[in-house]
Image (tube, rainbow over all chains, first blue to last red; front, side, top):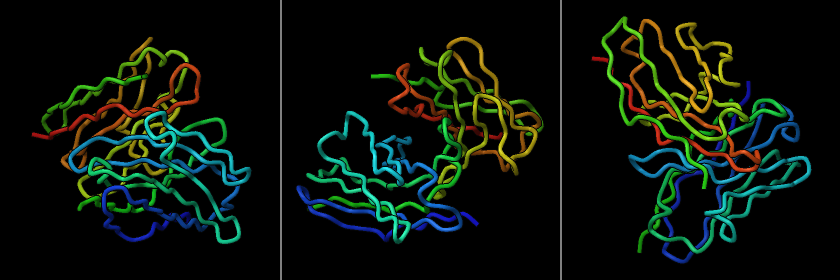
Length: 120
Length: 108
């Protein structure tokens, strides 16, 4: 069965960076794009960007341009999202999600979420 | 920047029909997707490509599109349908994804 398993919760100081991992299993990792979405406590979903695990091509929301980097290690079927220059407003649950069908944008499988807390 | 607009809340009694709308200028050109999210859980896809239902999603969930508005309809609402619902789509260029602000469905 398809699974996306994310790394554990992180606590970071303002100005630091965080790198969240997303390990895929149950399907061919390089055949489906990965998106990253975050959600602050009590707030809505916010799309951060996408990555094609086969090519490594990425696309980022303008809000995160220059601060976010999405990468992958195909040998271990794992995607990564690194966010730098953290500030308190970046405190949120970060999700990875698989795009279910080429040419569409449906996020059919999601990771369990990783809580990132930014606090001095 | 591109935005999708949803009502903050919708309330219905059990057995009634709930309709949640999502408006955006690019919706005539781009498909919409709907997600259900319950507290403490990751979102679940309930509608894709405006009106297609993934396997395992009950038939009471349906989607439709008309101009710049898409609608998620839940017929015969059950208590377990109480959740936050989000629409998702892309801007007219297809390069940027956006989520609506979310709608809290309350089952009275």
